[in-house]
Length: 139
Image (cartoon, rainbow, N blue to C red; front, side, top):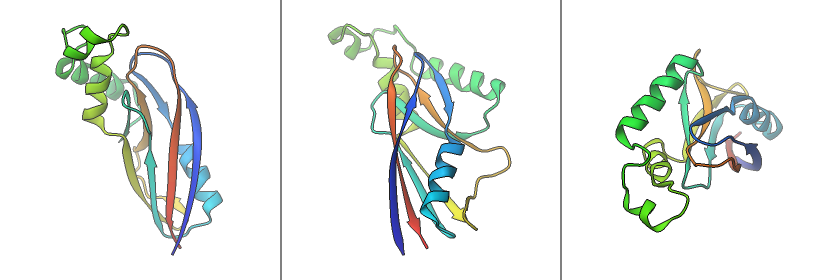
């Protein structure tokens, strides 16, 4: 059993912005030369999240509507009163999505379903350079 780890950078736009990171993670799996194992992807951020879902405009729009309903921007959150950026909603949305995903590796490839993609979702009020820590455990 071996462990391989890489950190990759991803540029985001402000607001709810999706970056399909599937190919970036697949590239790490290939470099790790693992046939069977697990790929764990983590974003060390409090205003961004990771999801596995279909990378399709209707799904992305529905996710945005759901998150806006649950954690609306400008609601009067306590954090907004203490910060000039007014990004409490970004923190709350990141709590909902989470900061990591784990995907099995089979035959040297991510074992994603037909319509599944790994997406970094930016929630903050300004563009960011996000780091993704990709850890591969396997053989």
